[in-house]
Image 1 (cartoon, helix red, strand yellow):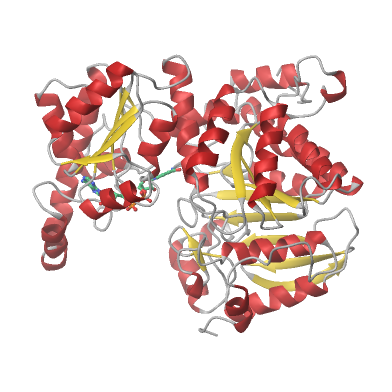
Image 2 (image 1 turned 60 degrees about the vertical axis):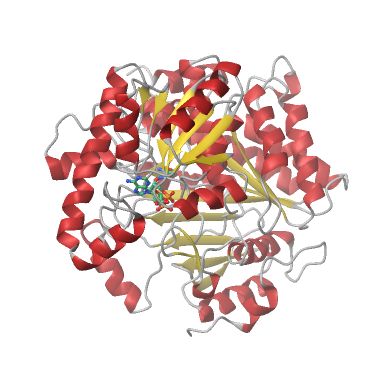
Length: 571
Ligand code: NAD
């Protein structure tokens, strides 16, 4: 049915507190996370079951949503519910250590794996687009993108500078949905950020929410203030109300070359995502309506100028990278430029070295709904990893600057790395397992008031095949090999995760990616300890073996240092 269900209207977010509706916390966690995804504070368009990322849904229809809730309430501790593209389709007796919920979303057989066929099935109510964390009930709002951007820039700073961006200027563009996280992520790394944004209301919104510090009308002012802040080593961010291509060209005319140049306009979409130079947004919107062909040509012309300016800045010493918006692909395809890919994408440059070590975006939510529980987990992570300066900086800043949406939650990057600095009892535990076991203890001791569910993004070390993004330009050419996410999902089941999911198309669209996820519910029990110990070894371990298999030195080193068994490693 088209109208939101009464159940959803009565929840309007995850139920909280220590009383549960289901037979156990594992089922309850699924029920709360599904409702958290559809919390009006969390989801983009909950009345249409859309969580984020275009049409990424949490359930196929309102009837399917109601049915999932009633199945979860009734589901025993030795049963498993099957959800196929957002609809419950079966329930089987399994066993206590098995997952309580298994989810598959949007998957199609190779030759049919495209948007056209998907849309036909979708119109017929047979399939649902699950994005990454929408259909797997693991979305937590904008904290994820802020942290991902922070990690990317922190890795850049580690590779290029002394571990942070102090004294360095990052120039970029776009202050929209995801791109708006850029200035905050730069200042969290103590750097200076100048951002071009053609839509003034986007700059204002980012200033109101504390993501960007100031707005100026002229580029001279922006350069002057940014230079002062960089010289003083102070964090600073400024939005400039200009077209990105024009701003970069004017910077070059003034001989201003930043330390880092990137871009997050929605260049992946020539018509709706990118603005041609020489127009205000209103003028450009009118042009798009009146003369779409001309809009398209002018938009592509601007993109080419934009890319040329990035390449020139790179020639003059700036560190340049593409931030996943496909500006390189657009210019290559439509303007026949074979130098468009002369600067790297952000994954090969900054994310992959982390994936090699099993590092990735690990997140958890307090099922109690009590922010105090997350504060306690923040404390625990700082106690467990005192040597991780970058992590400590993130936790401090997140406490100060990130507002919770829906269930209180936290995200951070942890990896494999079983080296716990001489503590023998901990020696065989991965970073993720050490953290999860500590949280489980705190729940058992009553220091955390209700169970905590640990999950992650599908964009993780060993869980995704996505040739335009996470697996772009793999060393051994295996960008499109999708055995890895499938093995990851199977292994998550074998290790006893409580929810396991496998999806097609997240981030880059149907047919372009395959990816998997897991949830583990830490309820303080021995069973939870056993599951956490296994899942948080095998899951980041998949990242190490996948990248070692592709020949990455960092992954081979991690496997050796942390004793990950890889057959045929010497072949
Ligand atoms: P968005 O559309 O909400 O924001 C883009 C902003 O750019 C808009 O505010 C728009 O006004 C502005 N803009 C467009 N053309 C411009 C121009 N020529 N000059 C100045 N401003 C211009 O999109 P978003 O959610 O912020 O994402 C931006 C892009 O970054 C997308 O292509 C997205 O796929 C990509 N991205 C990828 C990743 C990743 O993990 N791969 C992460 C973040 C963003």
